[in-house]
Each structure stands twice: as structure tokens, then as C-alpha cells.
Image 1 (cartoon, rainbow, N blue to C red):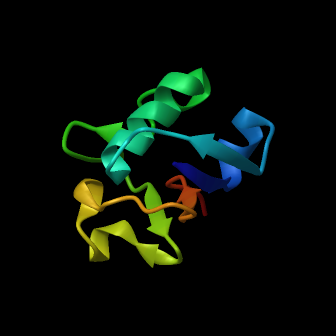
Image 2: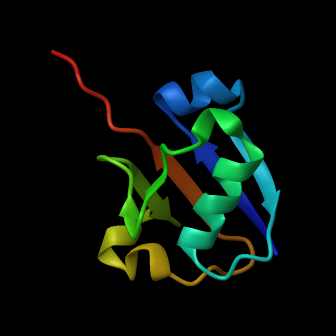
Length: 91
């Protein structure tokens, strides 16, 4: 299935792209994030940490935080748009 992933902050800077279209066989958000880490080495270890999102990373599916859905077990649907925002610290 084809999905759209929009990256923000350091993710965007590291990838050099704002938006990528992803063709995936993954069925869940966790599978998608693992695919992204495998396809984009700059993301390795920054999206998934065991059974949860890494750090304070925020991932939304069609503008809804996946933590308010089924987390990494949230089911993917054709045409979904995901926004990936890394934890950003500063003051």
C-alpha cells in the first residue's frame, strides 16, 4: 500500500526531504516505522524503541496521535498520511 510520511525538525534535516511516499507491506504503524528505519539509516533507532515510540517522538495518523489510537499496533490504511516529529529539547 502507498502512504505519505511528512517529517519535521531534525528528521527533515537529516533526510533532506520533507515528504516521502512509501510503498509498504507493513500492516501496522510499528511495521511502517521499522521499514522507515531500515530504508533511511539516519532514522535508525530514532522512531521505535522496543514496543513503543522512541523518546518523545510524536507520530500522527491523519492528524491523530497514534498514542490516542492503538499505538504501534494502529492499523495502516491505503492513503494514510503520517507526520513524524522528533522530541526537541531546548530553552
